[in-house]
Length: 252
Image 1 (cartoon, rainbow, N blue to C red):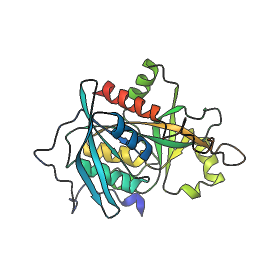
Image 2: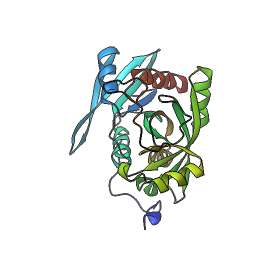
Image 3: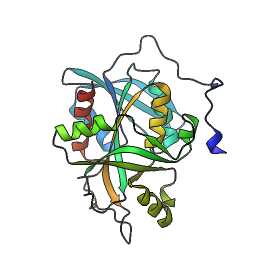
């Protein structure tokens, strides 16, 4: 069973290999948005320092400089297995223990405005990847949520902290499961948080994560809450990269 998959008693056949000459960075920023990636490479002191390889193609890993600090940045895939695997791959290319990850989420509470920042405090493990990195449990605590929440408050960024639901199947967010997760106190649904926290805890890394409140599931019908070709208040909103960069400077 999936709940029996965690094994910390025997070695893995494949492990990320740390390179002695890998550059040190103050933190690594991870986005899911191609719009954000294009914005950063066009507007910041940015250079490609490595490629992350997979059968689907090359993922560039960048180095950017801001506020007297040096950060890495890459655009990851959607979904826990690929997202975690790419983050594992960065361990061979850069030296850091801090990862700032931001992306969009579905909203389970109609009172949370579109585009508002959500800080996950715990994640319901309705995916498979986390069970290979942490013992089985319904939820995993997000270790640095209070730091992220404090950053938002200190900088006057409207935000809300609460539980999230990490699922593997976007098209199987059924009404029954939505109601169960809401009853648990979940305010968002996404596809990576639980797995990223499990992997980071296993590898001794520090995860700092926030979401952009996007489409609404707490309604009679699914509501995208966005106009065509308008990125305002979505995960493609470049203002949310500004938040991620400021958070990286804050934790560094």
